[in-house]
Image (tube, rainbow, N blue to C red; front, side, top):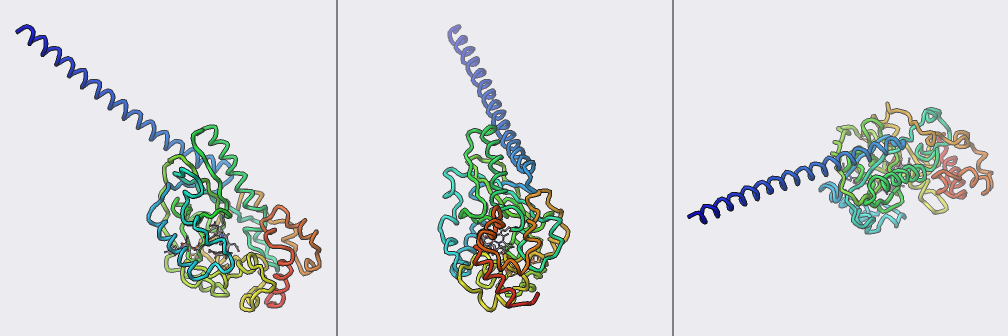
Length: 348
Ligand code: B12
Ligand code: SF4
Ligand code: SF4
């Protein structure tokens, strides 16, 4: 009898201590999870804050693979390519553009940033028009340098996180990822628009192998407006959100490598010799935006003073002026071609 009694006491003791340790383990597990979540939230906040300290106007995070919106945007890319709207930009066809994880093994999140390039000096009108995005320091270099500093910070704070920087030239569907992260919405002119900064933002991306907290996407605020479509002089916005590059002034003045500019573009240049801002200048979301605090956005002096004399500049002079700007993509012979075409179309 005593044996059974002692056995039951022992059993009871065993069950209670097992129960207690289970509760303890569960509580401990919950505490660890809470810490991990808190840590994840804190790190995500710190990362975005770090980007703002670096000089970016906006920073948001998206997690990979993203929502079904990414599939829709990828299908839109496929339709765009099928229609040959990329013209001679054959590099747009690479399959890699459809999957962000092909750019970094183990990619889990992406930090998206916007660099405000709207300078107070842009108020001054010039006869030879150049896209505002290209008038200051080369944005590829500016954004890359800032993101690299963030990368160094990550190496110290989150050593198990690998990263890869993408600025324009990587096969990444940039606006779709920026939209996913809530940096802004894709407007009918196909540019990414932020509620505060409009579309005067060049974009940068840092793909990360760590799982950060994703931000919510922003809703489209174009509403019933179609100003960009109406004002595009060459009808390049064939339907809302879709640009036919072959009809776009920006394409012909920057990317077109043929000896001449097609007549339907030439007669509509109206001063534009490198890029085109018309569909952004008319956008109501670009009317009252803060000027950039970054001196890198200030236009170069030679750009402000550009005139017909530049046609007589030799290669050396062009190269000197173009150094450090994104405009060096336009070779000296293309500058001369563009200026001549614009003067021929002469609506200035
Ligand atoms: C190729 C290219 C061009 C080409 C083609 C333009 C284009 N719209 O595709 C040309 C040379 C014409 C060009 C011009 C310009 N470009 Co560009 N270009 C690119 C590049 C390399 C790829 C863009 C791309 O993927 N095109 C493919 C097509 C399918 O994409 P999409 O037109 O953007 O279409 C998307 C949306 O329309 C959307 N969509 C389709 N259907 C629908 C329907 C709904 C309801 C919605 C909401 C959305 C939606 O999904 C599509 C896929 O994402 C990006 C950098 C990059 N790696 O992404 C820079 C980039 C887009 N360019 C940029 C800039 C600054 C310009 C110019 C403003 C420069 C200038 N001032 O001249 C002009 C703007 C012309 C214009 N209206 O688009 C910036 C845009 C920044 C921003 N705030 O949006 C980028 C992001 C470079 C950067 N890193 O900053 N560009
Ligand atoms: S950049 Fe100029 S030509 Fe191209 S879609 Fe916009 S307004 Fe039209
Ligand atoms: S002009 Fe109007 S339709 Fe076009 S992008 Fe701006 S708000 Fe959208």
